[in-house]
Amino acid sequence: MAFATSSGQKVVVRYNAFMNQPLNRRCFLAGVSLGALALGGVAPQVLSQGAGGGANRKLNLGVIGVANRGGENLRAVAQENVVALCDVDKNNLQAAAQRFPQAKTFEDFRELLEVKDLDAVVISTPDHCHAVIAVAALEKGLPIYCEKPLARTVSEVRRITELARQKRKVTQLGTQIHASRNYRRVVELVQSGAIGAVREVHVWVQVVYGGVKMPTEFPPVPPTLNYDLWLGPVEYRPYSPEWVPFKWRNWWAFGGGTLADFGCHYMDLPHWALELSHPRSVEVVDGPPLDAESVPPWLIVRYEHPARGNKPPVTLYWYQGQGRRPERLTAEQYRQWRSGVLFVGEEGEILANYTNHELLPEAKFANFTRPKPFIKDSIGHHAEWLEAVRNGGTTTCHFDYSGPLSETALLGNVAYRTGKKLEWNWRELRAVNAPEAQKYIQHRYRAGWKI
Image (cartoon, rainbow, N blue to C red; front, side):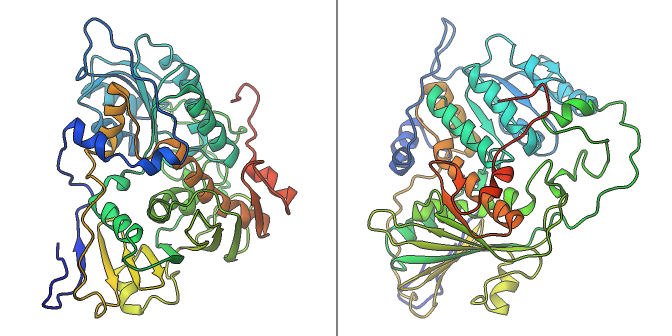
C-alpha cells in the first residue's frame, strides 16, 4: 500500500480485503462502531454457558445450505462444533457430512432447528427461503448469520429485522467485505471530512443476471434433490435446471438479480460511511423493458436519502450491467475500476472498490495527511459474529444496520417493476404514491408456509 508523502507521491491505497490481523477480544470490543448501536441495535443477550462452558468454548452450530456460498460459510465456522447440517440436495449434504462426520444431517431445516443445545445457525440458502428459516430460528431463540440480501422481499426483511430486535439475538448479514481494511480506511476518510460534505455517490457493478427466457421443457427432478423443500414458500412451478441449483438469481420468483446480490456489498460502503438508512425516494433512470419472470440484465437507479443530523441529503446512483457506469468516470478509470464506488464531495472525490481506493484529484491530495485510523481492524466477519454469540456484544452488520441496507437494494427492483418513482414511507412500509407497488413489497407464500 502507498500513502501520500511530501514528495508528491500519488495517494493510492491497496489493501487485501480478506487479510486482517487478529485482535484480542478487548481490542475488538473497544473498536466496535458506536454508530452501529446508534442505528438501533439492541444489546444482545449473552449466551448462557453450562458447567463445561467458558468464554472460549466452542459453539454448537447448525448450518443450513452447505454448498457454493454455503460451503464458504461452512469453512469459515469449521473451527466450532458443527453439530447439524441441512441441505435439500443429498449430494451436497453427503459431501459436507464427510468433513463433519459428527454432525447430524437433515433435508428439512425445521428438523435441524429441533436439535437440542444448538447455539446458533448459519443460513446460506437461495434468497426465497431466507425469511422462513430466519424467522423460525429467531423464534427458537437462536442467533443467526444469514447470507445477503437478508430476504427476497422488503416485507420479509422488515419482519426479520424487527424480530431479531425483539428477541435481542446476535445477527450478522453475510456482507464479508465489510470486514476489510480497505472499507474501514475509506469510511475514515469520508467521516473525517477529507473530501468535504458528500451529497452524491455513484455505485456501479458489471455483474449480469437475468434477461433470459422461461424454459419450455421441464425434465424430471433429479433423484438427489428434494425439490418441494427447495421451493419452500414459493408457489409451485415445475423443476428446471434453469433455476436449480445455480441460476435462481435470474428469476423474480427466487431472487432479485444483480441489485439484490451485489447491492448489499457495494452500497454497504456508502451506507456505512455516510450513515445512510432508508431512502425517501427511489426511481429507475433507465432500464430494459420489464420481463414478468426474469430480472433485468442492466439497470440505473437513483436513490434520494434525507439529511442525517448535520449531514446533507445524499443522492446515490446505482448502475448494473456491462458498460453501465457514471458519466463522470473517465474511460481509463472505468478500465481500472470495473466495479466500484465514487464519493463526490465538496472538496474532492474518493474512488473505491473492495480492495483499493484513491483520492482525487491526484494533484490536490499529493501532500495529504491521512487521518489517524479510528476504526479497529476486524477479527473477521464470521469471527466477530461467533465472538458476539459466545460472549455478548454486537456485530458490525447486525440486522438493524443491514436490514435497511437490504431493503434499499430491493426497493430499486420494486421501482423498476412498478415503473414509477417511489415516494417511500419506510415506517409504514409502503410507497405513498404507488399502491400498486405493494404486490412487490409484500411477500406471498403458498399454503403451509408463513412467517
